[in-house]
Length: 97
Image (tube, rainbow, N blue to C red):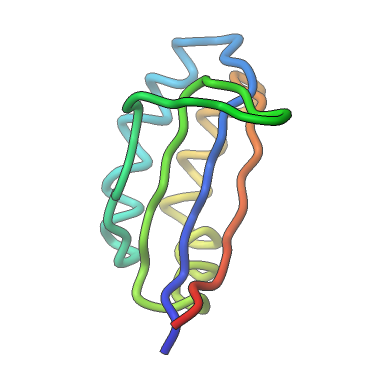
């Protein structure tokens, strides 16, 4: 079964306090959904139209589980805390195997 990945590339962070509130709620929600953080806030080299802002990569055992984790009540609470505090490109993608 192919794994699922959350890929989140932040374009701008306009409200660090909202991001801090999200950062308190999101990790336990991600763990509860089976997620493992593979990369977060490390060094970034951006190419093409990329932006070298905060980038997060999370691995989950299956694509379906990744979609369900995003839809969970706990993660939706984290998103509500984040609200309009950032602009980001968030994707759930299926691994190749």
